[in-house]
Image (cartoon, rainbow, N blue to C red):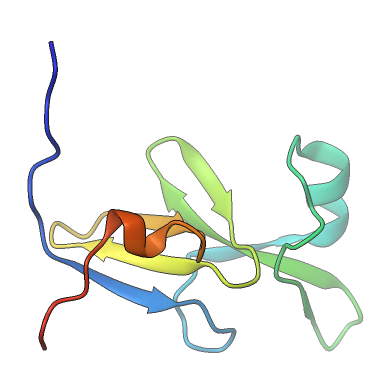
Length: 97
């Protein structure tokens, strides 16, 4: 069966630290030692105690860590996604505000 994705409006924001777009942070050391992901372009933030943390978005499949240049998409139903700047505007078209 072939299907077409249902049209749904979404808020698309380029990720910036300090804007509260993430759902949480994971210690950098845990991301590197426990994860099976490429860490080269992950966003990292230093805390006052000297620990580095990486922001992520929670969704039904788990956590998605945010890379430099990523966009955070929030669908009309509140579901969040992360999309790279290389794909964002092939998947989402800009609308008049």
